[in-house]
Length: 238
Image (cartoon, rainbow, N blue to C red; front, top):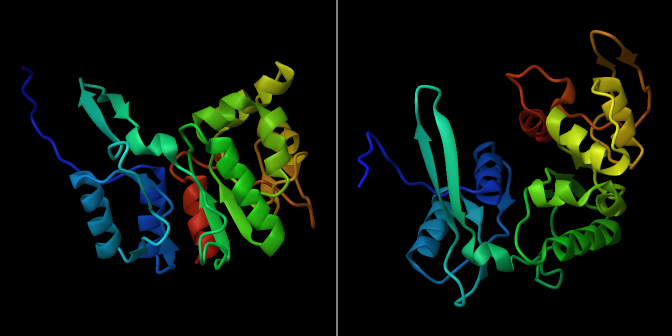
């Protein structure tokens, strides 16, 4: 046995964390997540109720337990290790026939795991095209590892594409193998695939992009370390 100084439990994950954030900023929020039929699922539903998150699109399954992870923080540098059991997350789907699923101005997709993540992207893009809905996307490791050849066909339907600098370099490296590590080249390289975030002028220490009406990805590639692109997206919505 290893004793710990402090511990706590909470509901998390990209989808739930985002839904809570949107709701706390006064935006109507609904979560499309997958849970089991166990005590942890009940906790998820309670958090949704407390945070005023619509649970109409929560997917329940009796075949698997609600996913969970254990985060261990230790050492002087507070190094972290995450041990995850994805459980019902591996069966996450996005049902386009669910009543009310298209009654929204925005979809926000975070890291997708499991066996059906590409089908989820296909279903989201089908609704985006059909209903002219806006879509923000912060891809996870599985999506980034698949490369731009696969993601490119979805990016052209994406309104907001959120990456940090390292993620952008890795994503482009899958395609060409050689990537110039500067904001201008990273932005313009991903821009070719069609995502939008802001029409703006971005200044860097060694270059300036003044796109006028150009559709730009606004990413933490060019942000101070204290500001995340997700925070800017929240500010954009409110």
